Image (cartoon, rainbow, N blue to C red):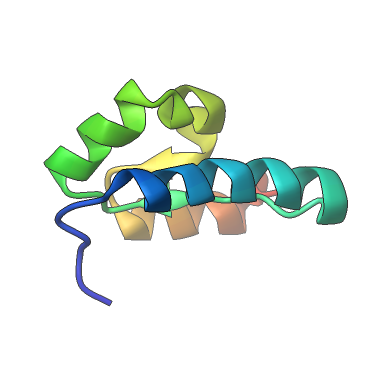
Length: 74
C-alpha cells in the first residue's frame, strides 16, 4: 500500500473513534506507521499522536513491525 498523502476530518475522526472502540470492545490496538509529513501533522494536531504514543506511532513501517514482533504489541 502506498503512503496516504492527505487525510480529511471524517477519516481522522473515524480513526480516533475506531481506536477507542477497538481498545474497549476487543482489546485491539491501532498502530500507524509511515505517515506522510502532512498527515502526521494533522494526526498530531488532532491529539491522535499523543493517544497512540511512540509505542504505536512510527515513522518507518519496518520499525513498527520489528517493535511489534519484539513484544511491544502485547
